[in-house]
Length: 190
Image (cartoon, rainbow, N blue to C red):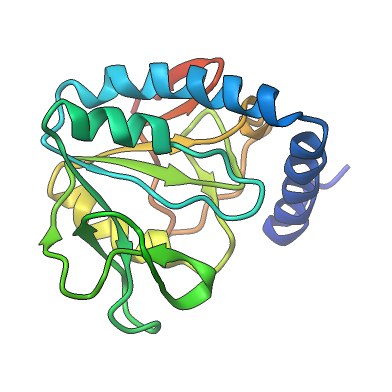
């Protein structure tokens, strides 16, 4: 059997994620996000600036870990687009303003910062750190520079988003350093 194309794999993984989240009660979802926060908080210990994201749809929320990072003195930042056609930057502050593509982002006057730890949303991830995103390349364009500056890139998702199969990688795909879910953290060896 031929492997699925990236687009077919994306559709299948998104459908699975949505179906899974529909099975969760609000209480179950909260418990799983608290477990995720426990794992993410341990990663924040060595960071100065933590890049998070405001979840869309069925994405798991890293917000509890972001709040804990802030409480212990870390700078927290979120993706913010100055222009939809250009790579986003991380701006310090809370995601309170609507931005392009349906994301909430810090206000345009919030300072631009360089995270040394970034929580990256995803549709799926494999054991090599190959991330399958929404297909527009926004994270790949933004992360290429941050990877070069030494930022640690951790994919965040529900446990079912960690695939056993290999995701086909394109030359522009930025591999992640690890994957965090309510089940724990898996760091990838390069």
